[in-house]
Length: 287
Image (tube, rainbow, N blue to C red; front, top):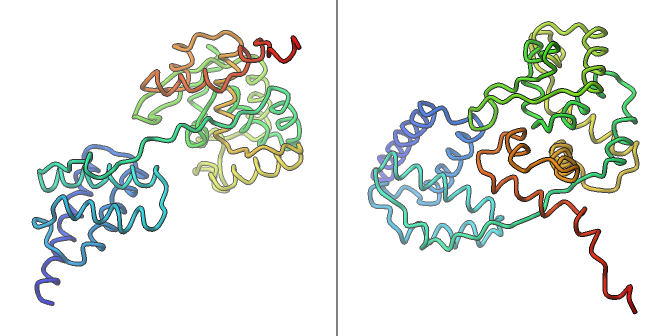
């Protein structure tokens, strides 16, 4: 028992060191939480075994007896492997041979997309000006929900018809053009609600709108619009990108507008767009 107690203390020290390292590298709050949870779960599974004695066989055992046996998804498995790999490379200065962990291939799931008509019906169902402005801006600029609620009034440049998205995913800033229609909605909203700091304020003037409330607004609008698809806030972003592609916008510009680091991430929309597929004539029609 004494040995186990010493190991637990070591675990705590190692976890603290890992947390400090992640913070110093400016990983996002969500990423830090995911990686810390992954390491905690793994160390709990190790049941007090000293960290320096943990080897490749332990990783394989954890993969088979915890992740696979409990039926966790491929995405969860990859997240766990990423967290453990980083922990042992930074805190323990040794490498995990991930090839031995039977790491799953990433599932290529195509994102759900709404048609332009469905987007219009959805947005038209919003009678509250603030609610309509929020969801309209997500679609009009292809914003992530976190980017929307983090926007400040100063990020809207009405003179140049631009929105500046600061410190987005990957710690990058980007500029997105604002069309006349969305500018009109924003102008009406700002005049009516008079936000001070955040563009869309929460219950307190100095705090941003809550993500949960934004989700509920969308859910209610989807129900009112009678849309049967599985619609999330990110669906509006996917729809924006797909509609840009279908209207002839170059993929490189879409990548820039979405803030993707890799063009491979943006290329998924070439599989979602049905415009070219719809031009293909089935041989059945010639029978």
